[in-house]
Image (tube, rainbow, N blue to C red; front, side, top):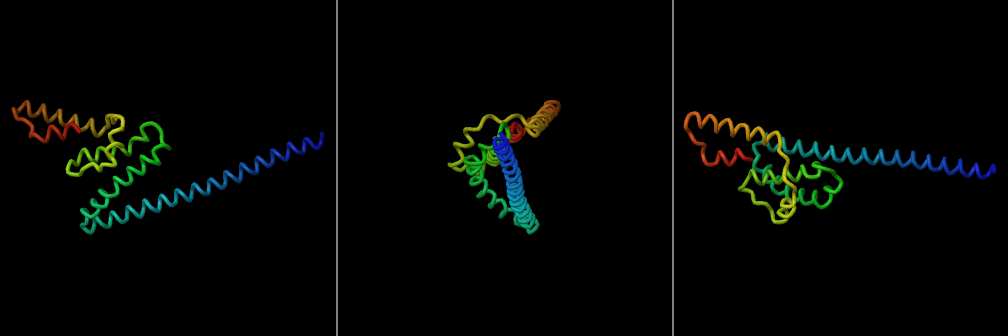
Length: 158
């Protein structure tokens, strides 16, 4: 009877030691991953700020035009599955919005099926403000008898 109790106590102690070791190991690795992410984010911000201050905003925009399709495809292929709800769509909705707001930038062929399969975007506060501004402008124009320029109505609907 005493040996069975010792086996059970040893088993429970083994589980506890394993759980503590796993918790410590995972905590250290999580902090390392977050440090790498913070490092990369800070580096990107410093490089971007440097390019903008040097008057090389066009060069920065070229870098982003190359990086957005690659990063969006990687996100859709790998990272997307780890998110839930609207969080899993938010970044891709932003990419979709980027291409909608900038018709001079063509949607890359590899992104068309990804962006085309997204559910409809929920109405955002920014979109609601744009609609309110367009309605106010339309009312003001109606009061004065003016009409909006052709591109203004189209931009207001985004």
